[in-house]
Amino acid sequence: MTDDELRQLIASNARAIEAAASERTEMRKAILKLTDLQEGVINLLSRLDEERPTILRKLNTIENKIDQLLQSE
Image (cartoon, rainbow, N blue to C red; front, side):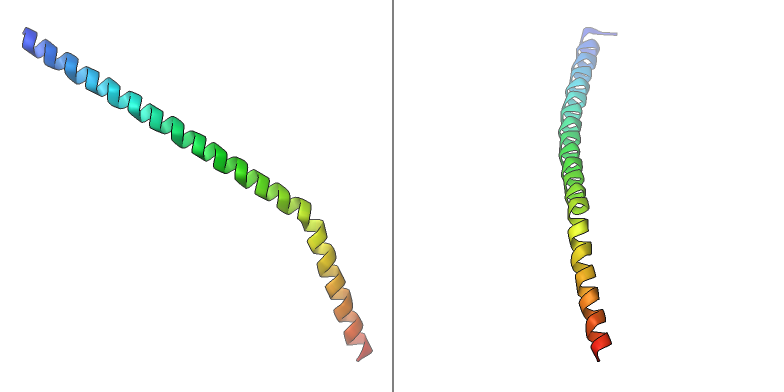
């Protein structure tokens, strides 16, 4: 292998390593975004679970009022 071929190979390897490092950085950023998104979904679901009893109580109240109205007719 000539010196020129060796330099080309080294340069090519350096570019490949830089590209891999860049991809790794982008993957880390994407993983962080996904983690933030997952935390947001978990928080949303937890709030929905907390509000569910209130919603069910309100629906029960509406149902009871409708039942009363139907019985009074």
